[in-house]
Structures are given as C-alpha cells and as structure tokens.
Length: 300
Image 1 (tube, rainbow, N blue to C red):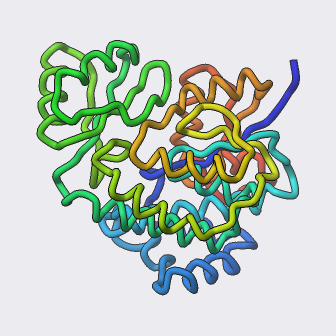
Image 2: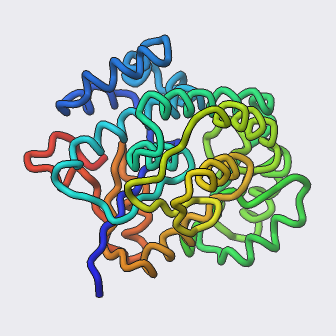
Image 3: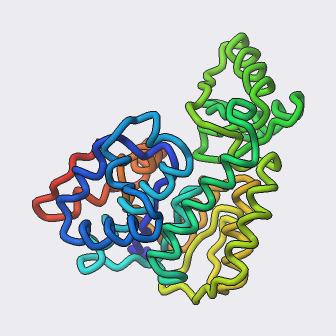
C-alpha cells in the first residue's frame, strides 16, 4: 500500500484569541502578517489576539485562519511535501494558495471578501447551523426534508453531519431531535453556511474571481463540492464557489483520499478540529505542530 500524505486545512471555528501571539513564533510570520495587513487595510494581527466575539465575525475569522494556516504550511514546506491537499470549507482557499493556484495576497483578499459577502447575504440571526452526532447521514438527509429551508451543510464524518438554514427551522430541528433522545448541538455561527440562502454571496464572489487567473495546482486538490481531485484551473474556480451555497462533502473527500492511497493526514493550521475528527474515525492523523522539531505550538 502506498504511503501518501495529505495536508488538510481547517475552516471557520478554528480561530481563537491569542493565535497571532502563538503563530508569531514562526519565522515566516512577520512577512505574511505584514502582507495580510497591507492587503486588508486593517490590523488583522490585533484582531487575532483581541476580543473573541470580534474575531469570530465571519469576515475576520476567515482571513485570520487563512493567515495562520499559511504560515503553518511555510513551516512544513521544506520538511514534507504533500501528495494531495484539501481544506474544510474556508480551508479550501488556503489549500489553493498553498498549491500555487493563486498567491497569498489573492487568497487573503478572497477570504475577506467571502466573509463580507456571506455576512451581507442574510441578516445576522436569521440563519443558524447545528451538528448532529451519532445519527447516520442517510437518516439526517430524510429528517431535514420535514423543515422549511433546512439543508445539510457538512458531511463531516460517519457520525457527524451538520445542518444549516433558517434559524427557526434549526431551532425546531434541535428541539425535535433532542426530544427523541438524539444528540444535536446548535453551533455558534453567524449564518446558514453552505446553503442556497447564500446564493447572493456566491454570485458576488463570481464577480470577484472572474478576473483572477487561476493556475494549475502543484498538488492535486480534492474539492469539497465534488469529493474528487480537480486539477483544471477553470473547474477549480467553479467548484470553490459552489461550496459557498452548497454542501461540503468532507467525509467523502477523506474517503477519496484514502482511495488515492493516502495513509497519513496532517492538519495544517490553528487548533486540531480536523485531527480529532479523523482520530475518532481511527485514521492516522497528526497536527502539524507534532512534526516540527522543537514545535512551539501546543495541539490545542
């Protein structure tokens, strides 16, 4: 069996106050933090070490995670070369930057815009999300049909599926399932990610990317919307936008990577959300900090 490696980049929810201080221990931090500040026109570093509530806002969290994950990749770059890359939701934009589809500056600009457009597409509080644990995804697919404007947003693992949609539908769903003794947790998010309710954000992002030249990736990328590897730049452009208002097939993407011969998954970015999810599925997953000699970050 071939021993291939995949780098995985985390999505929203992996931000935490103090992340700039921690990641500033890495040699490439100053260069990329400055580039980020120049492109964004505000001090993202201050936000990354500041109030958790402000950092959590979509248009702040997205560039914050992108910056930290990119710096983490720069640390690994000379030590390990991945055979494949993938990113969870927002993390897909980091994976594309790392694969050279566009440069760092383009990536951080795009994720900031993506955050802004998602925030504008629906009023805060009108949309929400919930994670269903320990219920087969097929059953969740049936259950969401009983609610108005409720969709599956993330197929995370065999026992975790995330639903997303109108707040009242999410709340009703949570109440009904909890009443049946099922485990369902409403998530602390500002909107109904990965649903048709964000079509406007996707349309705005089409205008942002249509003038940007995407290059062929240095590493094949298994994409969220397809759970298959994509190398054609025009297809990449199409599918990275699809996932704004469509589901993230994460479990299926991991299954595809395994089919492609991947036996080692390395999470590259803040926190270890993806690592713990994979470990629960009994897969060989590591956080990048464990691979850096004299690693300065904890595994959080």
